[in-house]
Image (cartoon, rainbow over all chains, first blue to last red; front, side, top):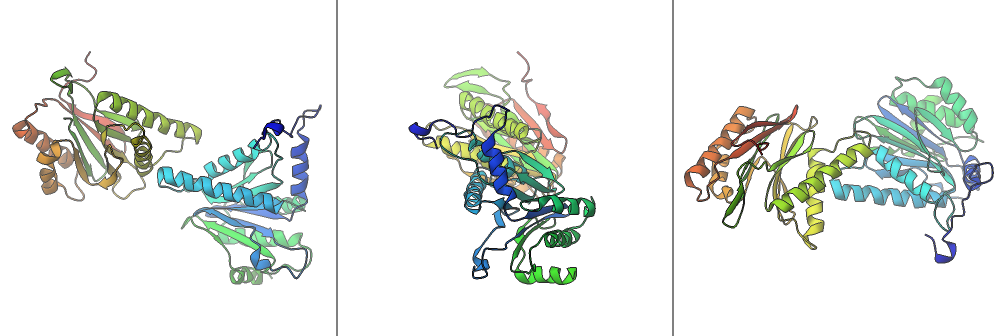
Length: 237
Length: 202
């Protein structure tokens, strides 16, 4: 990045000390579809609203929850195409790590690297910040389940439970009431679906949401199939 | 001309090297410690020119320290350390090779037997082994290790096997290597079991 004609950064400080491009990027995130995550004692769940502009859209072809390494996955709120760039970079960096150490890249390091990339785009020539916030779920190098949020600025936070995108304020309040430190993964998935339904426009079905789960027992990040989601939805009714 | 031994046992690894530092017909030093500590629970016994020995071991051990500092104290497993070291040997191989042959031993809580031993050579080969030798010593001592190693060995048995190998070299190896240093890597870290001459003696 940074053609000679654009070797200056487009993200510059305002008089009040703000980086307005980042603020605007956060606005883009706040307009995006809701995503949330819950970190349980024995695993992590992330989920998102996949509702699309028209009923004619083939939802099977849309992939918002993405696996990055064996034990970690991303979901986002904001601008989809920007997200796909980050997913590609994260997967590549994880494979480079594997090539060096013959071991999976721990989630905490994946987050730091990805956050580093996002920060670069706020201080490099000729580029704009990514219009997404990420939720990263995984079981870390020491076996602990972790949930992280990464913002367009490159700031990252570890969460017990959080929500981003449209309606995130209500969703976070809902989560605050329901979260317990000793929650189990099954309860967490249940609570995640209830939270998602709270702000859902119209009927929530197994086709218009996506859920990703990683359990401490096998350390493998998986997307729930529509059938599995339907089972949880039936339970919730 | 250097000798490196390694024997993995139940709960750790024994590493041993000769203590001779020599070139051509001249012996510089008889108390060199060729087993360098990599991290809190790993070490490598190295053979080759002293320059490459020091350069390579310092490079690897400081990069491992950097990893721990950058990642909140997270330690790399012995398997990851060995693969990292191999990768660096491979990268340098077609530019300016490190002429070192290594036996890398480490202790990890998570592995079944605790101790693991890796054989690396100057062409960047890597193999996990139960026991191994580097140098001319292989010709004399692999057969002893073949006969004596068994699963579930104790530290005493492993050290005894290494001592049998050292005695064989004293008996039959043309080049005189009077002093050997023996170290053990286990759950308590890296410690010296015995040495022929004190490395700290200047």
